[in-house]
Image (tube, rainbow over all chains, first blue to last red):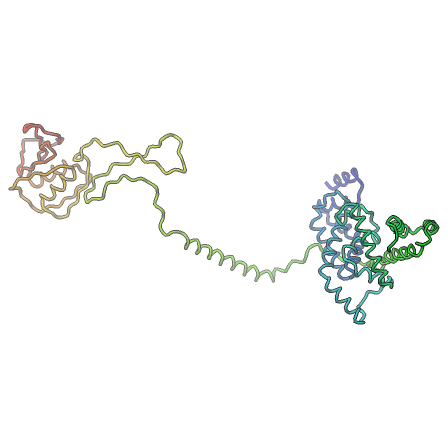
Length: 187
Length: 259
């Protein structure tokens, strides 16, 4: 049964992810482990870019893969599996970001009062990070998908649930807002 | 940035994202006034891309647990017990509510009865024989009961039940005759002892014959709906099989008394 599905997937369009999905759907649990290991990093980066917090991102990733595990049968194969997975990740992360909106406000207040909020040790530009924090989660998602995951406009459109032109416009606006905030920080 | 045409703005973003030195030099030669702006955007894109490394997780990937760990059976026990009690309580309440809301008296069936008024004497009402109108029964309609055809048998030939515990003979004969639609005629010198009458499914004629045997009288059908009682017994006539029928003359009288 599995071999038939594998051959079928190979025949239409070779997609390793699709083979793994088919294997999982016919009862092979190791296939999902392969999917998980393959995409954990990418999904984490998306969640981290939208949520701006490592722990929250880790929790969101677990939730994303739990949803995918439960609802993988709903994957309609019209897009790449990775695009479908990123869409779940973006939506889930944006939801989480809305939940934790108040927490980020508290961080801003602590920064304003002079106390230093615990920031993860990294070598990134703090001005870039500050500008990212002031963006809305939807804009962060677009920038992360474009600059971090380096997805094409079509893939971004599939991941955020719109057409290519809308994705292009949204990305342009998000980038402009980021630039304005960044230059405002620089001044 | 204000004052930059949109096409140049997009071109600068594209160059900044591409990061090609040659393309930079060509753009700076054509638009030297935008050299600083292009440099800013290039730094911005570089900084954005550099954020990814800071955001990347280390090589450690946590174990994925697809399902949440279910509660152990030990903690499920009380929950199941409570749920059981709740279910039983709900069932009892439902039964009580249903019983309380139901009407106490059952609705009477829609059956047309053709029953005579109750009387001390059972006049043996005619049997009701329902006959369907056609071969196909109609389940949603009440059964149609047709009145039975009129019975041609005279009332005094129909079997009846008469029970009198203690009364005079004259009263007993009156009751028996009236149950058969007859009028009783008795002579003045008729003996009138107390009698006990208990006949079941017996015709009026047979009752009169039986009483005549017991109390020594003879009943005659006068032919006009009346019965004449003569306090004497004629041993020559055989009363068996005698039928009360209209009598036109004295000679047509029929003997219905005891032998």
